[in-house]
Length: 501
Ligand code: ADP
Image (cartoon, rainbow, N blue to C red; front, side):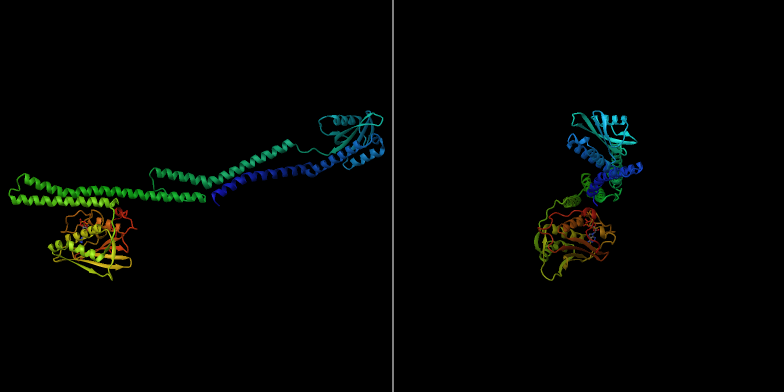
């Protein structure tokens, strides 16, 4: 049952139960009173009283309706006596202060008391006479001869009724006590099912606000409170995750700064060294000087490239690079790419070819410029880490049920198995002995951001000494207006987008 219904039920019970109990107490009291007085049930007393009352009233009526002479007649007096006999009542008739008739013999004192009670404006209570208590009703008369008279109708009262004040006090006390008890019970129940879980929640919230995100919130209490606990626990877990991610970002930022300073330091130190060499006259011939300046130029270009990579990576990471997707024939696109790089590769004695395993021409939605950057970075690596002559690079186009795969396969040095999962991390550079090349360590990280911006995946398959294949999988309809035009989030903290395949 939900909290709303439980609250209304508890409130209703908190009123109904005390009312019911009070009624029960009233009934029990009346019953017990009747039993203890030994005079039968109290209800029968009330019944009897009603009967007495009606008999007295009808007798009074018949007296008032009778002719003045009738009251003096024995037959009328006998009738009154008979009427009252049914309730063990008596009748006394007084004329001119003298007793004219009495259905039972009473002392003069008793008759005087009856008269006094009958005339009193407010009833003082029953009058005791001959061992019986009587309620007195007096009817004034005028006799035929004009003399003043009274008829006293005496109704017996067998016992006194319970005191009303005492009875009401008992009822009030039982209502108040049962109401308090009921409220106490309701409070205890609600405290167990609502207040104590709420207090636990408050403690947990205080812990969380103090930065302790490890305190678990247990589900307890009513359905609504349990739902609240569940939501807060979910919130705690999310908060913990986001703090964790925040810390990772912070670590990454620190690592980024240290990597940048380290990577920039090397060429800057070289430039400084060569400039000092020129200034100190170490480059004392025009050829030497030219060689020094060429080296300075190369190092400056390295710094320039590094800064450019860094800026692009930072922009991609902040999703500030818009993608401009266009329908592009995959095969034509790769042929163009080969053409652009062929000469430079040939100079390095590397042969590049295209193999297409596609059953038919395939159009892809590509940001041509950005995807070219991906291919250039991969080809650049294939050249840098090429240790065979002649070197071979093959671009392969293939189709899978999920989309199109572009593979860039080389027969270079390969990547050690333990480094393979990390090569897409920014600033990661494998320390393959003898093959430590210049580079920012951002080439594949940038490639990964761009491929993911196309909704694709990138991963590497490599055999040390055999060669490396960088695979790009682009889903059917990759890119396009219906896709996000900014690079997706999360690449920074998750590292490589693909396994070692
Ligand atoms: P870098 O600027 O160092 O080339 P990348 O992000 O482009 O940075 O590559 C990361 C690392 O991956 C490289 O340092 C290298 O160790 C390894 N790597 C990438 N491509 C190849 C490849 N074709 N052959 C061998 N190793 C590679």
